[in-house]
Image (tube, rainbow, N blue to C red):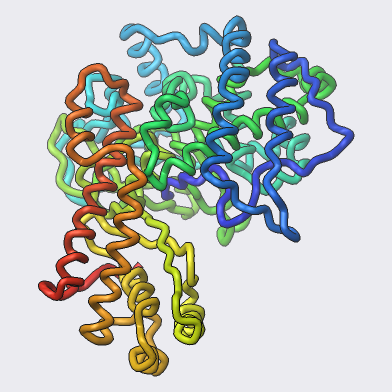
Length: 517
């Protein structure tokens, strides 16, 4: 069971619903019909250009305009709807947090008696740097199983699609192909149901997340220059679109027929945040070769540390549960951490709401480009790149946190810098990755690398020194602090790579081994 952060579609697909003239924006599911209607019109106006069956990727400038345009009416809608959801988003006092935590522990003991709760671990509801977490009740050895959560207590996308609401939503093209969105709507209605089987679990989940999804437009500006900025804007845009779409599908007739409670944008966004930060893939009960999305109560309170993947799903009869093992020895009273998988800080930030300062798997993805002057050489280089499934222009590459460019990146700059003799050598190479061709090529390749790195660094409004000073400012908000820490880690990696490349291009240093991806 691995955390799966991707909530919105990538690789050219779209999350917007297929336009159908018969649908109306009218919905009585929430207060603020006029504002909701206005937002529906705004969302409808966001139509990216389509070439054939493919939608053209929106520019950053277009996304910025869209987020700015929708901000005021959306905030107005939230304010109007607060008459309905205000109590749900009020801060809880420590006593209520403790009571809810105790109720959840009792619930988990009842429904998952083999979870090892109160035997090997317990929950701590506050007082930790991360807020809540899981702590050891006795010394645990490395790779010792400390938690086991059965499928029977999980919230899954299968349950969501088979529910009364799910059967209605599954008729829609978007919901039918987005189990994470289906699960989010299911979680939302479960949270609004006082008699939900998962009431105790849902009551201990955070009501606000430190995700870019919840950032204000002012907070988002702190990401300018970061490759993550585009995705953060995209998530906000897509979430509003999905909310509007949901209100259309669950119109007055459906809401009344299914006896569904009223829901607000904050309810919908909260559920998206829950699924975004907690969804995991587990084998399907009916077909082990397929996977379903699941929320795993209890296990999902384990916080992140760099390490190794120690979580698995055990499908054996009588078990059918997610199991997690310690990454190292854990002393009694210490927190038990797990590793979320090989994800850079950008993904942890976007989909989990934190930035890890000491993260061995971290990298920043930079968009590289190159202008070819010689048409004859350009043709040869193009063939070399295509043979390795690389693009001639607008190619993203990873720069790792130690300042090294990936081998794919170095292959690209070498091929984009080769002359006819070097191209001949590359054409004979049987490997997809190209190592050093000649001294001349290595220098030119690093000159091209420097140009792209300098361009990437110019996109940021601040320097490394500026960011370090800002992080010392007590007046910055937690969201601003997260964004600044992310862009700081990115810039440190880019500057380290820039300095190394300048030395190589000057002939004072040879390029060392780099990661392959």
